[in-house]
View: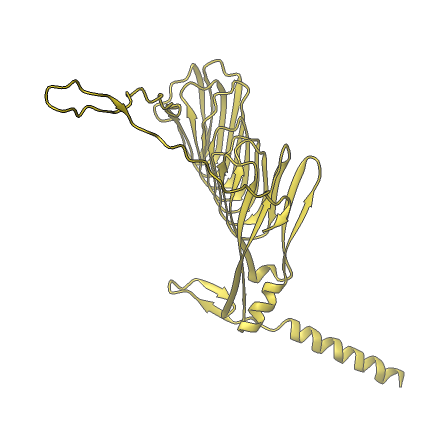
Length: 321
């Protein structure tokens, strides 16, 4: 009896394992790219948080991230959740296995994107973040783009390109497989920038009036500085790569760029401050119509002031909207 009981349990376990190891349906795009699952399910959710002095952190496994700066005091995210399966029901079941964990304390607010079946799932995030809010991103696979943010930027990606443009004085971007493109709009003398990729090109634009000590190195690739003018510079070819050191201005800040397999481009740009709109000095238009032979009478235009009577509603904080 005991032996038959053990055999029955073993058979049951084998059936479960066989079911869990069922081969997913292999499909191809029109270009022949392979992917799993014949059906897809997706939805869109929104998250809103007032970060205050806290940093925002995004932690995910697959998908894209696009963040832009806003003058508002809240961060808003539109998140597309997508999953695949071998049937519409399986795709919906996988979608139900997606969860966005939110954790906040006095220093940071974190979104952790989770899934029971990561292979068949992804999150695509489009959001706006207050300009000065620090942002930290830890992502496994996907493209990341950040525009206009001026708080501390810290990005670590495993597979995918990363782009940044803005006036942050502290930027650290690392990706294992992907290119990096950054435009640094700050002239902070204590600026600290780090760009590092293992496989991919790294491009950086810096202000022509920046004060930076620059170090760049590649194990297999070229280094180009375009029309940049350095107060001092050193260049050393090595095997299939090269290293470069240069100083812009007094060299008080620091820019470090490294790639193992890829080329490096350093380019200058002339920073143009936003235009300041001058006060309207035009004279108030007047009516000059008068009867023949009578002096013209100036009648000021009457301006009726309008007041926005829509009451502002309180902004949801740390909540699903």
